[in-house]
Image (cartoon, rainbow over all chains, first blue to last red):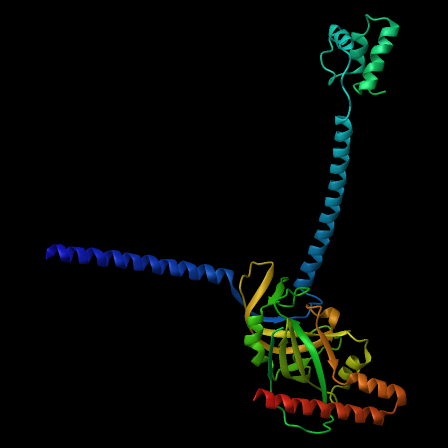
Amino acid sequence: MSDVLNSVSASVERLSAAARALEMTAARLEQREAAISGDVQKITAAVETNGDSLRRELELERKLALAEQEITTLMAQVSSIQSGAASHAGVRKTLPPATVQLLAKGGLDSLDRLDTGALDAALSGLGIEQRIAVKSQLLRSGALIS
Amino acid sequence: MRLEAMAMSMPEVAGHPNRVPFEGVLTVVDEASTRAPSGARGHRVILTRAAAMEALPSLLGMAIGFTPGWDGHDVRRKCGLITEADLIGKELRVQGYLYGRDFPEVVQQVEGGKPGTMGMSYELADAHVADMRADVWTVTRAMFTGAAVLLREKAAYRNTSFRLRGVQARHSLAGAGGEARQAKSMRLAAVDDFYLEQKGKEARWR
């Protein structure tokens, strides 16, 4: 008998706890609903000729125009960078092995960091015709810009 | 196309000098306003079909107002009355009459301008907005407390309209003869037509 009573008592406690939780949830939902939805005393479907609404609209339009202008400028910059990168990527940087060896002997291992002073120093041991030939190959490959 | 309608019966008074029938599109439902209406804190507004349907009875008997600049509402300048409201498709169409003798400038403005110049604007009270944080407010419940005739460019909804009924007949006759008397007789005929039609509607809706 006492087991039955204990069981019933436990069930009642669980039920009341559930009821309390439900009440709290309902209250929270009501608060959320009130925060999202709302009543407006008066709306007239005419555009305000002065006042906050018009000012806000004009401000937004001004900001939109500025943003559009910025977007256009940025798009142009991006397009310019992309076309530059594309033309750069299109450069053929292959050189004959003999030329590469000559440059390597002069201390130029990479064409990416090629500068005029370093190139002249690297080619100083060569004759004038060989220097011209190497520079021509570098120009053709795009590693050297005239 | 869905059609919902409501009308109030008016006693027929043939040749009433102060009643000039009009018709117009007050607003469109389930579509965002072209611009933010006054009182909507810069938000554009969608009036739902359900809200408009529920509010139709509140529109009947409400007044038409105007401002001297034809750019908004003036609740103290009431120049006419709405007697019928129909929800046809997305358009909330209204009919009624202007107090033509009391407000000849309103009749002149509506009659004299280019077609499509004039529009309408509703006035809502106790509007319930589903989500105040939304970019476009959705009105799910409201009551109509009036309307205004104004320049269409000043209306928050671009697709509104306002015109006098039978105005084309009056124009053509006045243009041919230019006689005020003839124009007046046509206006009275238009009024008679209006009431005959109203009478039919009254029977229909009873």
